[in-house]
Image (cartoon, rainbow, N blue to C red; front, side):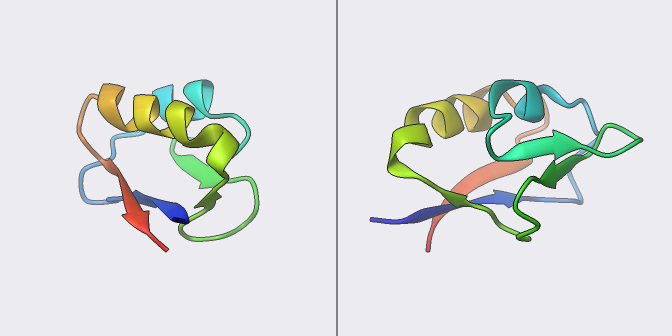
Length: 70
């Protein structure tokens, strides 16, 4: 099952913890908001990174991240 990482921009305040925990998929812009390293709006999460993506979702302070089926 393929998954994508969804960022709820109405919740995100640019803490940047998601990019620190998941640098393979996310980086931050100049204001600290997450940006996909692939340029996708909702980056595809490889199976090898699922555990890391789940952790990033869990620790997001504003619950702005979710994993969705692709």
